[in-house]
Amino acid sequence: MSTDRTDHRLAIVGAGVMGTNIAALAVGHGVPVVLVDIADDVLAAARKTISRKLRHAQLMGSLPTDRPQGELVTSRSLRDVADATTVIEAVPELSATKAEVLTEVSRTVRPGTVLISNTSCIPVDEMAAWVARPDELVGVHFMNPAYLITMVEIIRGSGTSDPTMEAVTVLLTALGRKGLVVRDAPGFVINRLLHPLINSAAMLVADGVASVEVVDGLLEGCLGHSTGPLRTADLIGIDNLVDSLNVLYERTGDERCRPCDLMLEKVKEGSLGRKSGRGFYDYDRGV
Ligand code: NAD
Image (cartoon, rainbow, N blue to C red; front, side, top):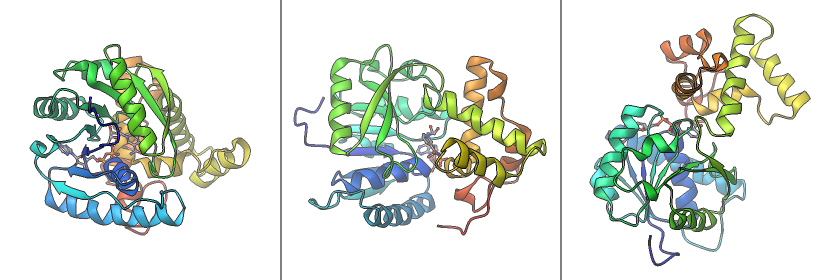
């Protein structure tokens, strides 16, 4: 682990919904970030998104005002994670993709570099098989938007070491986040509860029991859910939800986790939620 606990240099792999969220959080807390993705146009869009998120975070008063922003560097090369003190993997919820990225990252970084996966559902112990030093791997499930929600779910794998748990706590404190630690399991706590709820909400709409607005309105008005499950689905990304539900279904056999036809259709037609401008609701692109 880095001996200087204030010297945080973050690399984030994957510049999508969560990579840009976590980059905005880190840069806004004065931590330099190298953000890696596979295509220049994705990285160009990510830089704009991060600027917008930083303005939003400032408006919401959720960033410290006593320090300059961290530097943001974007790259298409995984080799550029080599100098990081912590690498956060935020690529799609597909085992093959995460395996490829984590294997390469693990080969590239120095021993002592914390490897965080922002996994939604894939257990940390499965990912441990893909890295050289499983003791340095830990799951941190940042919430969306990461720069507004201060609580994170920390997943300790069976091989995660005490020094890794300490290092991740130091980093999260520097980022103004608090974490609660859970044992490793498919979907952990949050998504074992949230994803079947969203899937069930979509099924109620498909069955004609209630409209999208009524399902969300009831969950908001009666149960105090902050946005409703279907607006949450749009924020997450319906493609990511389907991938995550597949991970849950394959590992638990729980029928409530089999992605419903309505969500599969939305993914097929490219209605992915906020990121595509349309999901269960319509959005102005870029807002
Ligand atoms: P996303 O699809 O928005 O972004 C993924 C990014 O990874 C894309 O930009 C893609 O180009 C990039 N990528 C793919 N293969 C790559 C590779 N080999 N090297 C570098 N970059 C690569 O996905 P997301 O919603 O940001 O999800 C990322 C992770 O975070 C997933 O594990 C997801 O389950 C988890 N997560 C998502 C949310 C959410 O609200 N969307 C919340 C918490 C956790």
